Amino acid sequence: MIGNDLCVVLGSGGVGKSALTVQFVTGTFIEKYDPTIEDFYRKEIEVDSSPSVLEILDTAGTEQFASMRDLYIKNGQGFILVYSLVNQQSFQDIKPMRDQIVRVKRYEKVPLILVGNKVDLESEREVLSAEGRALAQEWGCPFMETSAKNGSSCIWLHMIT
Image (cartoon, rainbow, N blue to C red; front, side, top):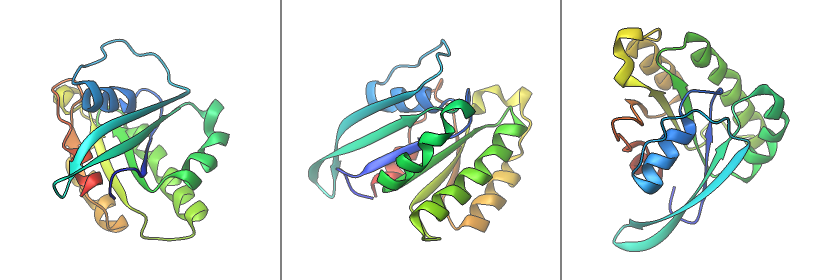
């Protein structure tokens, strides 16, 4: 994915989609959880030594806004699927989201990254690294574990290269 494309961040509510996005765009961590409906960000980046703009759509994680997901997916060129390492249900929730991406895009190999967030809460882990790696391997996509709190934003580098 190259800049000026839309990257869509998907996942259940409370997994840290907004925290990861804001950490990348502004370099700050949002401590307070405030459910997102839809937030749009732009960040100037450099791709292959050329200036570019990465557009990021931070989506609602709550079921009440799930009907908007088809539109997000239709307009997106790349996707970051985020789950919380401390919430097994959030890991289960991303599987139908990926199925929805494939259905809407009508293409199995959509640019996608699987991200397990909140690695800073290791003592509360419910989803093993091996589970995330296995799912990413099944989907043929990159996988990483990260923490918005600790400033890990390397997921975006995968999206723009």
